[in-house]
Amino acid sequence: MENKRCVLVVDDQPMNVRLLATQLEAVGYEVVKAYDGQEAIEFAGKHMPDIVLLDIMMPGIDGYETCRRMKADPVTASIPVIFISALTDINEKVNAFKCGGVDYICKPFQREEVLSRVDTHLKLYSLQRSLAEQNIYLEEAKKDLLILNRRLKERVEEEVSKRQSGEQMLVQQSKMAAMGEMLSMIAHQWKQPLNAISSTAQDLEDAYIHNELDKAYLHTSVAAITNQTDFMLRTADDFRNFLRPSKEKTLFSIKEAIEQVVLMFSPYFVKSDISLNFNHTGDDFGVTGYPNEFKQVILNLISNARDAILSHRDKQSTNIIDINVIKAKDGGMAVTIRDTGGGIPEDLIGRIFDPYFTTKDSDKGTGIGLYMSRTIIEANMGWRLTVSNIEGGAEFRIDI
Ligand SMILES: Nc1ncnc2c1ncn2[C@@H]1O[C@H](COP(=O)(O)OP(=O)(O)OP(=O)(O)O)[C@@H](O)[C@H]1O
Ligand SMILES: [Mg+2]
Image 1 (cartoon, helix red, strand yellow):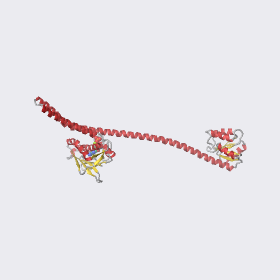
Image 2: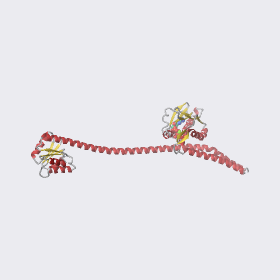
Image 3: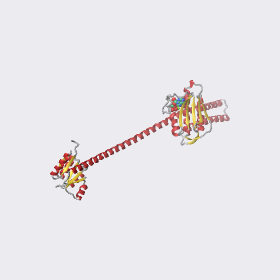
Image 4: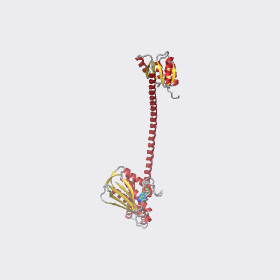
């Protein structure tokens, strides 16, 4: 049988070897026999016994030396060795342990004693071996874990950097979208002064042709032109400041921030025949946050309301956007923006804050306005931005 335990019995007395072998074989061990130290060392390497029963006094190399050499060879070092000897001196026993033996049996030996000691040491040995195997297994598992850990870390870093570049792209796109919006507003704001300047120039030429151009006339015309260009520079500055990110959280007035947005953009809404109203009741609180970003959110929300109204135009007669600052139930403050644009279909309302969700043509909307607005309001300022449908339109609400 393959898994029979193998015992190497070493004694220079063939009688002893035979006796031991018979007893061991009787209980199921396989026995390899050696008659001197040299042979024992050779067989140990060749047969890889599970245990060795080793006589001490033998011609040639004695039992101690035999044991030492087995222990010195990594192949056989771990095989347990039990000495069997007629020497009963305590020093001999000590010596036996010193050179690597695990036990010592005195001759004449008792059958039961030999069998039980062999059995005990085999069990110990196999325990040791399985412990060593477990250890190796644990070491391997540890290595695997380390590798897994490293991979996980790499994956996390990869994902984080992917996310960051995704976010950066979104921020970039929303800036571009806001800039596009600004450009068309600037173009609108500049139309009137440009017309005025051009007609003043025309007028100057006419005056010259009709000989009416004196110093006073020139002075008045230049003043009129300067007046217009001053206005244009101011609007350009306003827009530039509007796009500039706030450097840090500051105390600002919600009321003033909304007033600035309304003042800046109402001409643009008037052009579309939409009335943009700002009503505030009660006190004006100071709040802590990013004022420019807050203004951009208000612009996003009123631009969306304008788009909704424009695309809903033939179905209604009133075109109104109402901005209200109200006291919330919990004593805090809330800003609501209501429009008459027909509201948001119930099956879409859960997705409008998702990045890139839009119902507009690709040249009209990218679908990041609300996503950025919510990020600014909730993640950056710790407030809340929600939506609901109302009679005839939608209501966006910022709870501060
Ligand atoms: N006041 C509103 N009334 C009706 N629908 C709205 C309103 N506000 C937003 N929506 C819907 O939500 C969608 C997402 O709005 P969001 O501002 O995120 O993107 P967008 O306006 O389409 O594009 P942009 O990135 O240019 O703002 C809109 O396409 C529109 O369908
Ligand atoms: Mg939008």
